[in-house]
Image 1 (tube, rainbow, N blue to C red):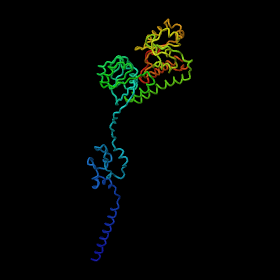
Image 2 (image 1 turned 45 degrees about the horizontal axis):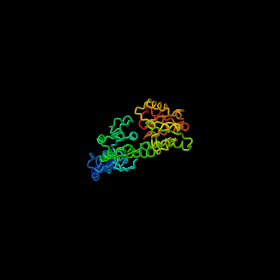
Image 3 (image 1 turned 30 degrees about the vertical axis):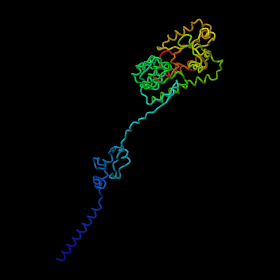
Image 4 (image 1 turned 135 degrees about the vertical axis):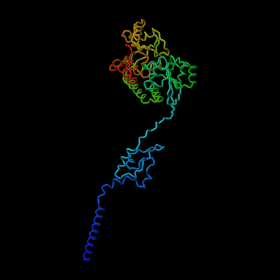
Length: 417
């Protein structure tokens, strides 16, 4: 009996042992369904030293999306990614976490530019220039056309275009009569003037002694005009607009030169050019004689060094064309008509071809200076050689110029008829 009980007990113990072993084995082979979610909640101790002290959370997700703070040198400090999960796209994290820095503006160092003006003076200017004055309407128009009117602090009374320039302080009636006191009050760095200022020796020296650079130019002289525009662009930091103006002017001047290049002297008309006063013409080697040459005309007064002519001399030369210059501030047609009627009624000229054929033309002086120079050249060329320039619409080009460089429609009369 006892033996039987011992055998049963041993069998039970054996079953228990086997069952225990089987259960342990099963437990050890279970899939760890919840284990990964708990694992990343702690950063390994060995990696914690690489985590920046300014990171508020030690969780990997916070490190991936955080924006690195820039150091004092401006270079961003990127958090260590050694504690990041291996399935995190490090390239994405780097892209989203890199701050966009704003570069500091580049300050151009001062630059010195030397320019030789129409009087042969060598003038060195330190750029950038921020305050200028102009005593010539052609130069004033150029300054405004290149986009630098905000730097214009003084003008002459005759500088009236564009209309907005009338708000600028007047510092003299003209280059011949600058007002020293008013000029000094405006504190310009540079004064631009035409050659009339050269006659004011003592006053001119006082302006220079006050520390104002004086540049004397001829904006109505094409041999100087492109360089003047380029120079204005350089000192006023408007190089692109200046280049555009030079290209525009040069295109039309070259067009005229090309058209008249093959004309013989017999094909060119004799022109009596009259200044703003009767019997005052343009002498040999003058700027306006150059206008005549450039546009295919012959100067009636080419053999003289003086500007005064007699009615008998003009009549005997029998001009085919008469051109009269006026300066009209209002640009109303009556200003032109009155001069045209006066010339047509001169008894001394009634036998000339110009009067017989009504070839008398009036123009405003502004179309031969500065930005408008090509309008003057085209106008005279068409007056002298209408067949060569029949396809040229002067008014259309003048309108285009005004709109292109001033953003304004052309108003008033500049040529007649």
